[in-house]
Image (tube, rainbow, N blue to C red; front, side, top):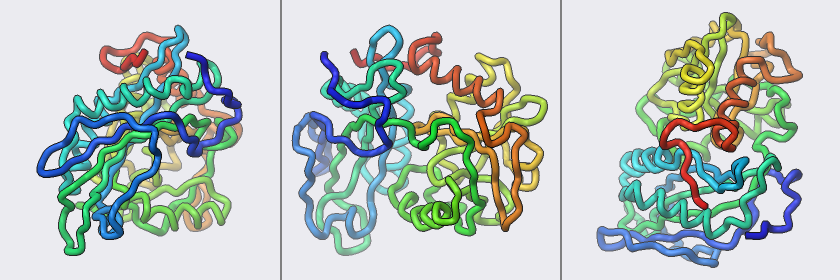
Length: 341
């Protein structure tokens, strides 16, 4: 299929309308079969559950063109599983995991001409989401829902490529100890907007959130997990029940151990020990890994030995290995790559 006439190399991380999107409706206690549509608009009641009480969750994954020309997605089964967890926590009907993956495949295939070519640096972002659609005025779950998927071609999430980021330790809390930090609820991201706007106004790229109970432990940023590298090369990631279980982070930890032979550890990370790490990175679907060069708390800066000019050596190996797997340059573990066409 001939690709769209798009300047792939200069794409930003924004919305570009594509050909088709998937829509499935939940009514009378069951999901319909769902279908692809060209209509990119949604009409719902002014009293819809999503508008009144933010009953919505979402996922994010990407479609790539591999080195041998195939269009693939990376571990969509884990996105399906995570959306299941989100739905259960928000009292929403679970979209069956096989239906989720099948819908992703259909939507990507229908927009194959928008999947950027191999080597362009761009990808097709895939956004599955669900929301309560019928009128709800009392505080309770909706009775009707829509599950939808749209796609959009995107460039790098952080402008400037791999230039290390400067973070601010936020004065705000991202999630409560027994709240919704471990799921992809829309409300989690709404509450982070003021904090990220403030950080940008102050000259920072992102926030580092600490645990809300003691404010002594590293959690995550508004949209990515942390990965640290010790001075002796161990890869460490924070452990917390209020951190979103990033698929990229889990994949990187596997790559570190099984492909690169590095020691790995998932544990509580105290902010006081951050100064002792050699490297720091943010990982997630959108950016894969973005290196962190500096973290500032109350005017005091922690600068990592890897510096502000490039990725640290271990972070670079992790990035190159995982993107090599995603792009088909390296053999993937069984089940990691879903071939679309």
